[in-house]
Image (cartoon, rainbow over all chains, first blue to last red):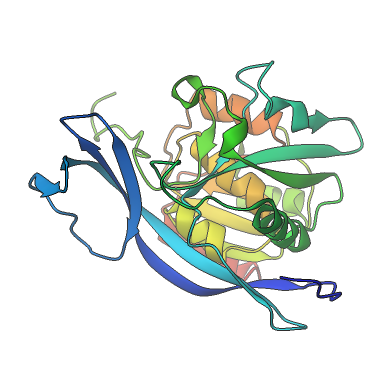
Length: 180
Length: 109
């Protein structure tokens, strides 16, 4: 990204479908998440060093890079796990502070999550968050709203956060025919 | 074509408040990750998904409206969230296939 003075026009490239796999270690309860292109995650417990990993969930996802159509700069997003819409569930949350709602213009806040464990894996830099935000805002036609993307680090307690994840998991809220 | 014109011509059920946006095309998918990477601003998003997370995806891409097909009931939680985030949700008893045909005949591609 450097000191390029280009007014970037980002486009999504190198899209790759895959899965976000969530594992836990039954010995220490550590949670590990990663992106996998494998259709079937390991179903049986496996050992890696001190950890004994079990797959908890696997959700379909897509990995991508962003490339500037003008200067051809490429920004990779291997560190991005998922985006989540802030639904304003906790009023004193730092993420909520970015939410703006006024008759003329609203700012909708999305949280960018990295892969776990957070302390062991590289997380998205503020520069990359800015690029991601620019990309989605450039795509918008509406003048009544814009997008703000912030880091998951602003969330005090993810366990009580009720945001809307853009993730293909547990989506089915359908009833089988004839159940009504 | 404007959204309200499409609602009237196809007799779609209006489930939320409506912002009469310009419709730029149609995107059909039941996967949020697919919509995030491939749908375009102003598109009508046709799906059978009704989980509240569709609001997150629709809002991010600036979808003109989400059309839920097959007469599937949209939960109140999803409707409430959609109204809060100015996401339009419409419904139809048509299948996704039938609705696609009607949209195509109406010149929306």
